[in-house]
Length: 330
Image (cartoon, rainbow, N blue to C red; front, top):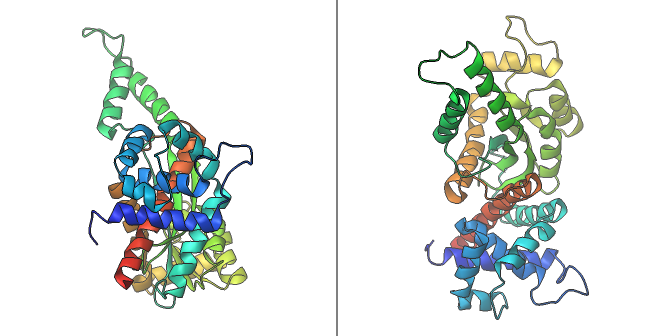
């Protein structure tokens, strides 16, 4: 794929998808200068490049041919893009876009769930553009602020300050959970939230949304999704074989009490599912792709817009894969 053609393809593909799913205008009394599909395509292009709203406006103004491809005579200004972000990127619309791309990949026989499993994983993003080392040094300076060079530090003061700061950071950490097709790195379902907690509650929703348009046979996940209830949902309710290492709980030599967790403990002890479970690394590859291509830090400031920005990165990732698949077919 030629790099010079990639952004233009992504812009056009995003517009085609949005035309099928979004109404033309949000309100009959709006100015009707731009349609919702056109604004959605511009937002995807902005995310593809990792730009601010002002830089995205400048890029669009310098690309009249790209604007003509989606029926625009002039580029929307940065305020219009900022306002359209919250209105367009709602969870229902995002799910419809993911389902439409999933259906396309299924018809092209690229999901291959007969040979490859569905892989579940989660990742955290930085809430702002600051390195981990910079945050650590800020905590150390804050902890020692007000202390002279000759004054001894009270025992436990620095650790308590660091722990309190870390608790606040964890509570505000943006987190994205995904269900990934191991064969093609397509994201079939995604959930975003603020706060780093257990992955297990996300298992049910991710698996059910992934099976709406794809016949999933096997699902693999790390020990963060370990739960007897999750095994029951997958194996007994949905007839999907679940492979999750029994790593939750206090370490002991005894087998887990639950039927399926005990079954997992025995199979992992014999390494019976080693070949299938190794495909879980494909979801980690997708995490790496998201952060390498679009950055590990978010630009949004409020929790709600941060959650929407993470889902926009999922859509941009899927649309980029769709463009690559279409170009291979040309």
